[in-house]
Amino acid sequence: MKKPIITPWKVQGSVDYDKLIKEFGTEVIDDKLLLRIKKHTKDIHYMLRRKIFFSHRDLSFILDEYEKGNKFFLYTGRAPSGPVHIGHLVPWMFTKWLQDKFNAELWFQFPDEEKYLFKENLSLEDTEHWTNENMLDVIALGFNPKKTHFLIDTRHAGLMYKEAVKVAKRITFSTVRSTFGFDNENNIGEIFYTAMQAVPAFLPSIIYKKKIPCLVPLAIDQDPHFRISRDVITKLGYYKPGILHCRFLPGLGGMEKEGKMSASEPQTAIYTIDDEKTVENKIKKYAFSGGRDTVEEHRKKGGNPDIDVSYQWLTFLEEDDKKLEKIYNDYKSGKLLSGELKQILIDKLNSFLKEHQKKREKARREVEKFIYKN
Ligand code: TRP
Image 1 (cartoon, rainbow, N blue to C red):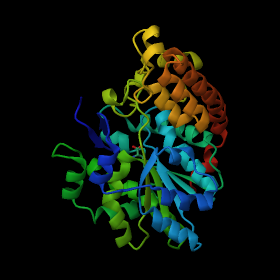
Image 2 (cartoon, helix red, strand yellow; image 1 turned 90 degrees about the vertical axis):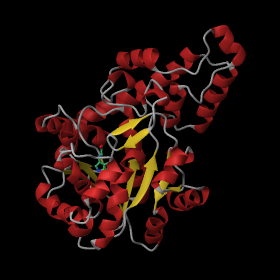
Image 3 (cartoon, protein in one colour; image 1 turned 180 degrees about the vertical axis):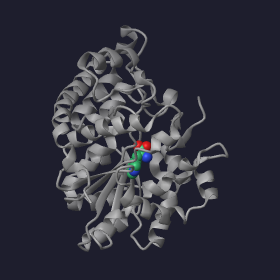
């Protein structure tokens, strides 16, 4: 097994989420907190029930303020470097639920310089292209255009840079180096980048001229940026942002092998623009199976849903607990075969993607509404 590595730019090996909570110093989202959320949302999103969103920083504070009538805004983002895959959609779908339930504004950052700085062979023209494409996927999820604002770093630089330097001045190279494992070969843009990612967590407070709490749903690999910028944000006079952390959707080859689904390994991912046939082929060919070697053995001993990628994917995608439970039990008992389980996932993905792709094309006409105009 590869040694686990988790930074915002690399996730490798099997991830021990309990250990991460300790290492990163975050808190579990426990039942008490779930009940508190439920008071406001009426139901509990399946990603909370299933602990896909499993950890947080200062969610209690965000709810304290909310209960006092001090509403928060949401903030998340996507560094454009290629097509969006199903794994990317996980935190965004949950963010959409939060927007609806709390009637919250969403500020969505497209740091189009980030992957340009961190990747060898990506030009700014490339990231501009991917920004335009990736925005469509975000819009397709149904965010409220009146309450959602896209920030594109190079396009909104005039607005953001002034705030970024205030953050940058208060973070030392030594902190960045140890947090991200940088060395003398990293370029100075990489060293500065965290400052840009911090800005949207307090920019709305500047724009609206009042302190507004901020809640950031993200995949746990993004936490280090906020671990080092949250204190700085309070030093600048704003509320400390609350953070909600989610797990990674495993790559098709399984978590042990590849870590999170990787956009640079196409056979491990399903892209939002994949057609039906491609989805079917990829799942059949690459989705790691927890089944037995022969049908006879599978019928007798049953499969292992806990390591089966198709089942794991369904826990991220199938909202209906009862359906999911039945699939789990049937697979474990040997009643459901691996090919049949894969087919359930293929159907689920294809019906989702059919709708998503329609909305994604429609979104081409709506982009301008979402881009923040200052
Ligand atoms: N760095 C993120 C990525 O690599 C993009 C991002 C920008 C982001 N701001 C964020 C992610 C806030 C989560 C929360 O895709």
